[in-house]
Length: 211
Ligand SMILES: [Zn+2]
Image (cartoon, rainbow, N blue to C red):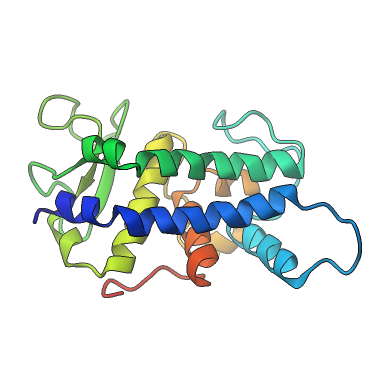
């Protein structure tokens, strides 16, 4: 099987991760303080949001990814809107047309997947029949474990939402992941993939390649 076919094969697992993530967000979006103490699981889940997307200090600007965010509800709904679009991209019919094998291993064996969409950046191939807008899965992707593959699929779909504005700003486990502000975190593809792993598996670090 090609890497693209392996990625298509893994769609149910990736979708399940996103479904669990959106259930956590839904619970927080709907939460109203009616009595104290606030239930433990709600506090824990808010902590997960703060860890990956940072404490919202209003107003939050995202270079136009979202309208200016001024309330907690806006903040949570903005995050959820990206998972909504990830979920749409992972739908069978969409993923089958968006996922591709690259015609050559452009960025070397350590890049397992990448997104080309819209205006190309320096070093990226020009749009055309060989390199249409797509999520590309490099040859090494097929050798990864199934959980790592699901993580990467979710991560790349976050880029796909807006490849100019959702970039790799800070990676979990590095100091700058702690130091981001909410505006940067909302534009960080790693925040979307890692928050999803935290919601679905209680993981605050990426999976190992063999997972
Ligand atoms: Zn990335």
